[in-house]
Image 1 (tube, helix red, strand yellow):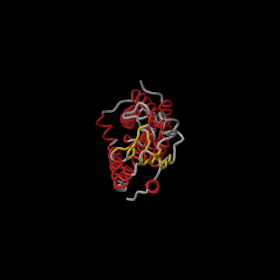
Image 2: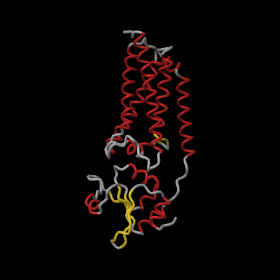
Image 3: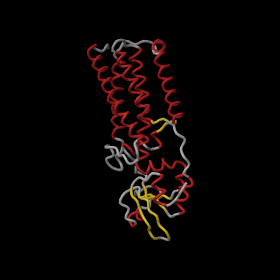
Image 4: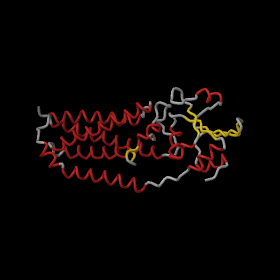
Length: 279
């Protein structure tokens, strides 16, 4: 059944509008990914509902590129395909359907990540909902649009396919070349442990995640106490006995006697001052 031109136009316009909303949401998630550890997102509602926790996890980066960057690119291409389909259907309606299927694969990946992290990213959920809605739109459009062969569709979309491929390659190159080589903080991490400095943290704490990322591989030498209940190696009772009010909390002890403590994110320089360690 051929779709009425008015309905077709409305679905494509709605797709463009949703693409803009998705693009803005993705750009915010990119900003949130690079935000300082001291800068909380307004969608960090709890330890289980947090943009920052999911958006700074190991799942938030693919081959050196923040996943949110790919999200932004995906929505730009979606809007462009929908805009082009307003003037010429057939190949571009087919392209919309295929592109939305690609988007659904990313949704599955991120939902699995949220399940593993036991956390929900509200803005990620907005993106997921938009992709599901635009997929439904594309299925309706495809089913009710006169069909063309896959070969013809690919031939008409060849320039688009090449352009998206090249842009993706450029993004990979730019992000991996421009990435600063991470400093080695092994000496500081080892010194912290020697001085009796312990980080009381949580696997559900976004600031803790950024602290681990700050140290990189050297964090393996830092002594961390897991305070969140039910996690692997959780020592909740110890955290309660130490009166840990929030994570991360850095505590220096010597011979079992607490010397000092500091709650919140500490930069490398602040940790050096706190501990008396040098690199």
